[in-house]
Image 1 (spheres, one colour):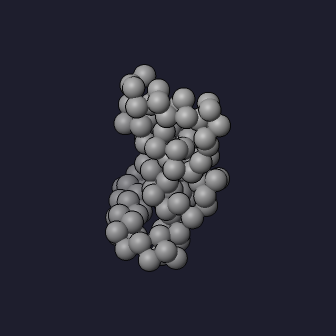
Image 2 (cartoon, rainbow, N blue to C red):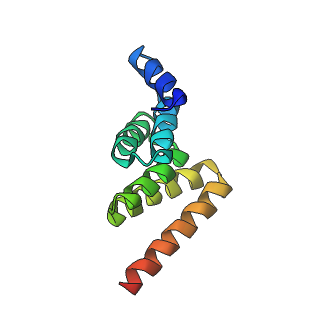
Length: 109
């Protein structure tokens, strides 16, 4: 476990739970290719803040890496809805690209 993850896990153990902490842990675990653990933290992040579009985006990436294209699509669609509501144009564009790629993969299979 890298030092950053250890520190973040320590914060969580100390009771400092929150959407940002869970997102950061999820992204860190995903970066270390520990996708199942990443998914747990990202799901918790979106449960704590259902409007956290970046967490939805990352959750979709992790779901896809775990082989669940349907869950990835659902996460990205939720993230897209949140990003549009907040006016977050960059996340909207990114999620539209991810969803188009998923559509192309589905059409090709």
